[in-house]
Image (cartoon, rainbow, N blue to C red; front, side, top):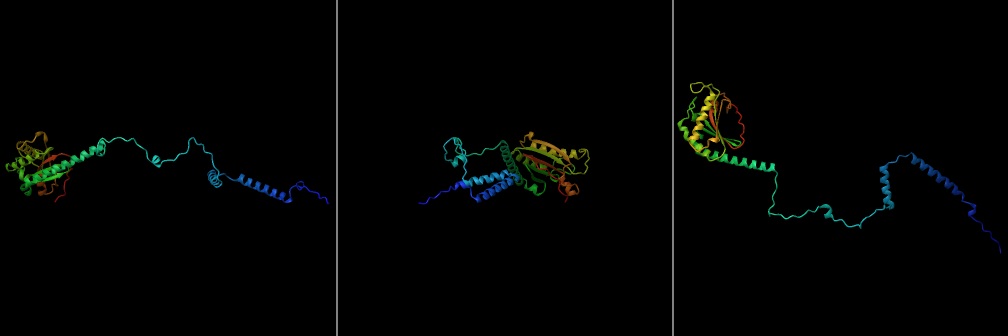
Length: 274
């Protein structure tokens, strides 16, 4: 029987190729360490890469829970519940601020005033149709103001403040209608730019003032108008309707106006000459 000697392989050491492999790994490690030492760390990019690696390798973080996880209600997260209160009335009303209420009241008042003045204008147009057709009287709406314009040709002789008797019934009709509506009444006299000087009127101011006063006294004496509602004004030639450039224009400017004011009037601008 032959004797076989067993040789211990471990005693011989590592194979020759292992030395070369170890040297290569050492060199590679040094190479990457040098690359890392020369590089600049981008924190945001590192976090992004780390997060991607965490998802790729399934790295989990430990989360401490103080309560058992529960389901979340979409209604509870999206809507805030309110305390129900009974509605005292069956109808739904909209609340308005004080300014809005004042604006609504103002708009309603202006609308009512416009309707009242328009109705008065239509009534006077019917009652004074003959005088309007003959251009003795003119009616005009200026904003919240109704103007009754009495032309000189029908009411006063030229250069005089004596009210013609045939015109008094016209003023009586006007006064009766004015007594039926509210508002302040202004009677104003106007003249042209031609100088007036006689024993009764020293200038156009006196002429326009006395004409306005004659109309006002007739209005007070022919109806139940409250005198507190009336006031008088004289403007002479300071507020012409038309430029005083012709005889026709001057005749238009010689007038007495009765203005019924229940709101803001529109400023009347002189027109162009004809």
